[in-house]
Image (cartoon, rainbow, N blue to C red; front, side, top):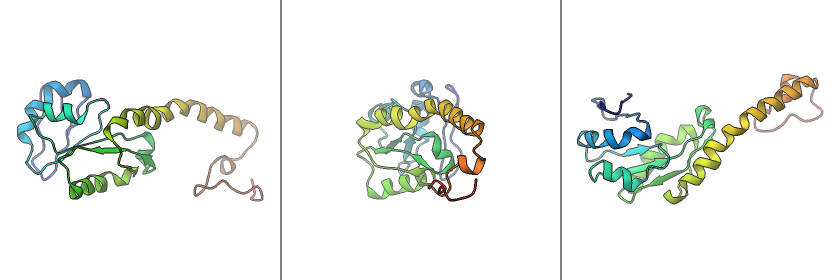
Length: 163
């Protein structure tokens, strides 16, 4: 469910999803706070908006986790560090990790390090894609077949395999 800065209503179900652009948080989250069940867990994927700030915007609601997904998460091969607010116990933390596990690795980290992960693990690789595509095109121009240009099962083909 998408939400604009002025209208955001969760679905009537056991779980809800609000997709908000971080600049809309200040206007939208206070009105959404009353919709949260006491046993809900808020999982934020927004960089720079801390658990303390989210708790404040949600009127004191503090069952919050933050994660920083990266592009390879789309195919289940991501590196997605997660930080938990102090109100979440082991069971709730396991619930969040189970929710995020299809995205790839989800190491638990201190919240203070999330921005460093956002830059190095999330944003950093996207700046390299252009170069990776250029390298692929160079390999093609040198006569390497598609099979020889791509890794298989996380291991490169041996030099003895056919081109």
